[in-house]
Amino acid sequence: IYDFAISYAGEDRHIVDLVATELKLKGLKIFYDKDFVKESIGTDLIDYLLEVYKNSAKNVIVFLSENYLNKKWTGFEWQTIKQKLIDNYASNFLKIVKIDDVPTPEIVESRAYISGKGKTAIEIANLLF
Image (tube, rainbow, N blue to C red; front, side):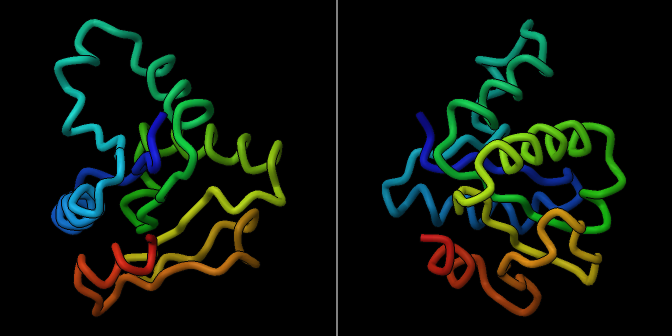
């Protein structure tokens, strides 16, 4: 079981990598795809990611950006996360970090989020945990 699973677009890895490192330094168990390349080789990535986001992660961090909304894989991840949100709407498992001015998707527009603009990785990590 992971404390946090991270969903992001590859173009945004520069900030995600730093935040993931800060969360790990806090002793949290993080699913960050970069750390699980060896384990995922040969697996069906759709099934693998579905299991992670839906069942294996207590919380999910979405680094929301224009890149995120326009990618195939993050689109799949977002659909899985949205289904978990529908099934557990009262839960606060979903943590959104907006890293640009992309509009917030309707299903989560009333939820508080972290604006990552102008914040360091340490500041973002401290707001998440």
